[in-house]
Amino acid sequence: MTDVGVLPEHISRIDGDESFTFACHPKVKCFTECCRLLELALTPYDVLRLRKGTGLTSEDLLAKYIITEQEPGEAFPRLYLTMVDDGRASCVFVGEDGCSIYAHRPGACRAYPLGRAVTRTDLGFEEHFVILQENHCQGFLEAATHTPRRYTHDQELTLYNQFNDAVLEILQHDAIRNGFIPSHKDVALFILALYNLDTFRRLLLEDQLERIILNKEEKEQLTDDENVLKFAIALLHRTVFAQFFCSMPK
Ligand code: SF4
Ligand code: SF4
Image (cartoon, rainbow, N blue to C red; front, side):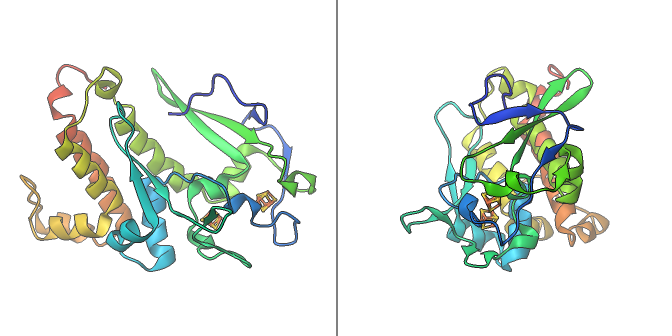
């Protein structure tokens, strides 16, 4: 969950139905500037799509393009896209013609210049938007008008947001908020199930995961990547937080 309390000067809140003017295309002077000098955190659904965009397995993607970091005190690690050491810290997927995996680019790249945060309420998650107006970005000089909600739809972010919100329920689980620290085994399952879908699927199909035996019908569902990720999210709830189900209902 992103804190929307105090914001830097170039970031401002915007209502979901408020208008803003922006367009990005290869003719802007700053084309691909925003694909450099950035820290790009990846969500599990981003990695699912990067597999499609690159044709690599999740195992190879993790080894080749993804850095895993876990700060002391954080319950789970964060995964970042590698940047190239070219003096400009360019994204591994940026070239002269733009993004080489454009159709499967991460959610943050689709959403730019918008940021989306969600806060928990008694009724569930509440959505908030911010807009980033960075000096180098010429897109704000263009004429096209959007609203955050329309832009979200136009950039095909709906499924990204649905999966990200589901993962957020793990990251912001009541148990974590109350100081529960997952074990090394939990963290290993977190990375395997959410970010290494191909290996996770293989282990499920071969009945190699401790205490998880799927029937034929359930295994057939695993041909679909989105289903594997949904299963992974549900499994993490069941295993990592199993001991809290009685005492800390959500
Ligand atoms: S993934 Fe594509 S859009 Fe995102 S930073 Fe890299 S090159 Fe740019
Ligand atoms: S800096 Fe802004 S206008 Fe320029 S390429 Fe990036 S998003 Fe588009």
